[in-house]
Length: 542
Image (cartoon, rainbow, N blue to C red):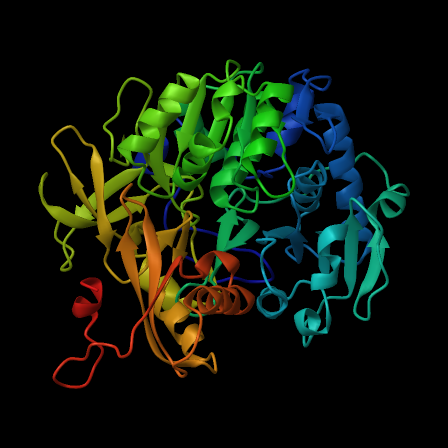
């Protein structure tokens, strides 16, 4: 693997003639730009077909390509050079794919950032990436404050879907007026298929988030491997991904997969409340629905769910967490559809283990997706047999080649031969179905995202009313994982309900909101071992 130079990354570790690429017949020319996923629809005569639809507007492929060209020309006018980063802090509206593909087509590197990110973490993303240009929705403009922009290179903030309010940092431009002056034609940059295309960041559960670099060919590879085998999309499909575009899972669902075949993506900005989801399904009639176990639970338990019309759907998918049998059955009762469960990661870009319609086992992450090699190994790196527990390793041509500026974490996760060490413990049965058994470390998934209990514990310990605390992972009745905090307060007279809300809010304000403990138990003292350490096994019995 070569080192980053001048914004260019060449991945020599997993060539495109690897076992996985050969298996799915995937080949791509040396000179390739990922914007072809969008623009090839014009060559195929699909310019008049709808690309994106929803309450925030409809764009045909012709219109979306024109918008993307304006964005690319606009970015170039700001003096950006090949490989420079553009931070995207956007909700799911037509502006997102337009800005993304515009940046990629012009040879720049967009960063897809979680819109729940607080200012101090945004400052890290800006500093780590060196981005001098950012794009955000007007609703998020206030987050780009002095804290977020301190000691960063940010000089221009482009605001979409609203007014560009004046700020004390960065020049702020209203996208509608700004883009009007640029051409709607743009030749693609002469990028290499293994050149850096875009980044996503890990959740940062164990210290600083990691910039996960993806290459120009990675989107096309994930579509050839997963979408063609599992989704089998056509031009008549409408994909509705409730997980947002800034997640790798949502990005594939809403961008890569539908655009690769001329299908449409239904975009839902704002919080994905059940009523809004039900209304969008009935109004826009999607055919393929993407969710998470937490979301399916909320939808099946929502008041009046049974009165809604789900007849347009032909396929429902889930990823990120273990799906319980109860939720599976409740969704089937509600919609008539079985949920197809899979497992992927941001490092691999999308799903590499999956069940299939007509070939599934409840509670499993499924079988190997063609195009990906899967191995279960013990801690010594030896392959384990079926029925034995091992740590999952995965290799495919959509694997990230490195974490940006993190050689330590790159060496820890990306192993010799292009294998990714996932840290997930699995058991594989004789039919090739994989069953999750936990993490090799202490990370757990809450609402589809990794959380490190110790990080939450250290945060709670900083509260002035907390004397000591411990945070642990607990398994709910439906097999989802959650966080529980056991707390010793520094005062004796307090209302437990008020204290719980106070502590949960404290964590939400200092960490990403999903990391707060769902349960808080108050005790007079924490159990200790003979050496004075917190007895975490005893905590599990409380």
